[in-house]
Length: 251
Ligand SMILES: [Fe+2]
Image (cartoon, rainbow, N blue to C red):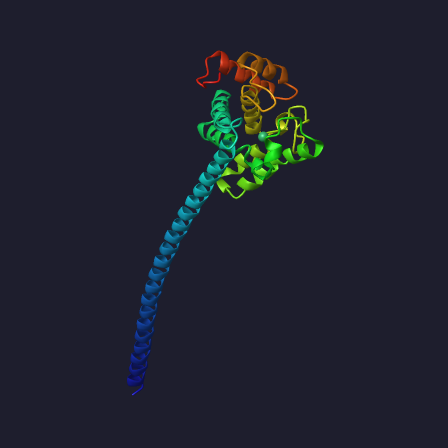
């Protein structure tokens, strides 16, 4: 009798174990299914993130192209500045490569060259085209254009270095420039490069208040400015570029 009871208990215990085993298998199955669904959802999220990043990048590029168009339109209105930024960009890119910048650094410097004076869009035409000397107030307005330009390009995340170049392209080696009065190597390298290209192109272009200085006199001016207004190393690289026969039509 005692033996039958024990057998019955063992059978009961075995049945419980079987029930628990089946329940565990069922939970594992559920977990596997849930894990599979989670993985699929994760893959879908990654695809959405990729799509969003692609859209964001395309929007940034489209915005950049619009700004280039705006800069072109601003210059094209004025026969004295037409093509200036394009020439500054080409020259700055060659100069950047000459001093050992990588291709991608040189490209950003060239793009900053294209947009360096975009901030002038906020300035009155009467000041931009004035043939005579500017008044104190007009100079104050004129000195705002690097900061205005940097603010316009600020939403371009891929162009943060370009924005720094735009902001500081009127700094001078001795600290007498604007907007921040930076000196020497505190001025971003790209801004020092664009400054040399900008000054050279301005000197070799006609302006309402003077004609082009011509290549030789412009090169003399650049050489004289080395060390106090322009970065001496960039100037010497520029002069080497010229003596080696730079392909730029103005050199
Ligand atoms: Fe400028």
